[in-house]
Image 1 (spheres, rainbow, N blue to C red):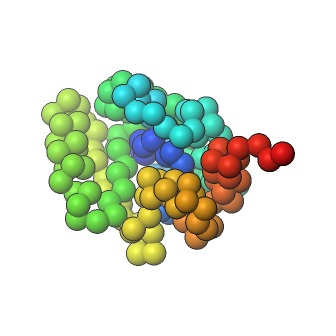
Image 2: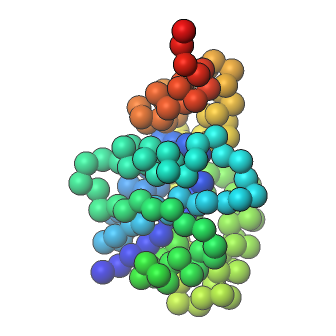
Length: 162
């Protein structure tokens, strides 16, 4: 069984992430979406909410598992039996950082390959950071995120209504 890990913060998951997950699912028998827990960052959504949002955003029956992870990605990949790490590339500006990470991961674990996938063109400018900023400013994010995320952003950013 060919397994790939798609790591990320997914704070929140976007349609671009979902597009990459769908592409990965077409290439691998099993895709593990690894929601990163990083003490150095302060996400809008805690890891358990991000996992729930990813799960609720996936198509029914997708060959995808969703779990949290922390620590070295190559260790997590080994634990899950993955032979590949999926990384999404939106633009050339993403490549330099992702290339460095891929080379470091290869040095740490030569048996795990990095596969770069590009989302559809309409998602190349979408990022979680930009989506959160649009939502904070009251903008419409429906074109950028799945339905469960829209409601979660509203609840998180607008707070309870009187």
